[in-house]
Image 1 (cartoon, rainbow, N blue to C red):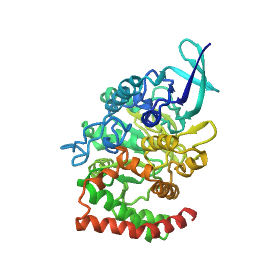
Image 2 (image 1 turned 60 degrees about the horizontal axis):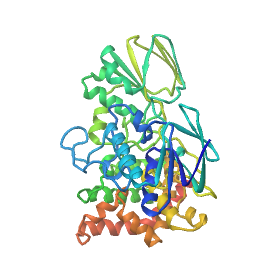
Image 3 (image 1 turned 90 degrees about the vertical axis):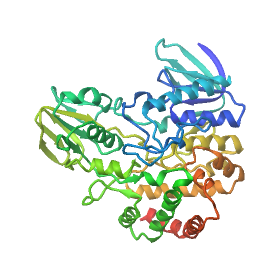
Image 4 (image 1 turned 90 degrees about the horizontal axis):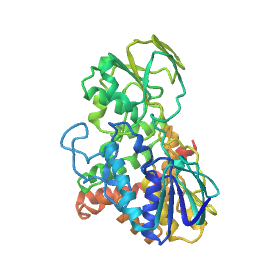
Length: 462
């Protein structure tokens, strides 16, 4: 058995593991070993469907040291007028470059692909079965909690009869032309992407059936633009969000106020959404999706027969020529949390909502800056993935407490201000703080902060 040592052993070379490693490399002189079951870094991006894109701007995704994209404004398409969204191949190639040109080139990172961690520093090479023992001097970093479930590799929770064509969206471009009708299974961002892909590539809306177990709230992409040119949308959106929180009398009232402020959107104005998992879409994408009229709201799929679709809430007839597109995998599914810093481990989790790479990177900065786990955990309250609006409030509350804690430490404040993964810092830097409209938004946010926080506490406990 081979034996070697390292300062940090990172289990998982996906987006979060790479973001942690990138910052740790910058902030310390540590040696890092990364282990991953895949043959390449980048995690699920290596298995992504071909038409996937980021649903927030490329400019604040990835690792701090290397830009993703050029922050261009799209001049056409359903993202027109907003910052570019990297495609799946772009993101995968970006992470390959991070490993090749940044981490490995440093001489302080060892990457063990096609390997699995068996526990206690023991690693098995998947192909040969050869085992190695890694002696970890400081910590094991578990990046698996932020691993995404994806359609290509997840385990289906429904039965598909022989003769039924049911595929992950990876194969939709090749298979679509062989069928006359399409049924999209699921209501998450993957399902939305699949609907939009069909419509943009010539499918008639009447050819599409959409199985929506629970309607989702969607975040307006205008709210997530990071440049100064969008200050009124981003910081103005924060102001409107805080006003909604301050005035909300219930969870449903909060959702209604978020919608009235044009921050959240729904598929059907007549159907109240039940979930919020953070999908971010443009108004143009929403209008595109609303062309689909055959939307089935009878819960999750149980069984698919050639001429019958069985769901939790009933059955409906099916066209034998239908191509079913399985979009039922849950992306970030961890609604439970664990302490991030323990004696010999770091459990990577979000510490800012819907921002896994920023979170992982800041956790690395905290690890490098402070001495005790008590100090570190005080700056890193885990933020669970959301499901309902109630859980969204709970997660927002945890994230707000983190933000307050970070603001008390000048070194952390300065790091965040200079980190490209901080989606809102750039907008504040690029505007004239003496502009009356900018000053008015900034002052209003300060005025609302305490009342909004108090209201969040009440809503979270409701």
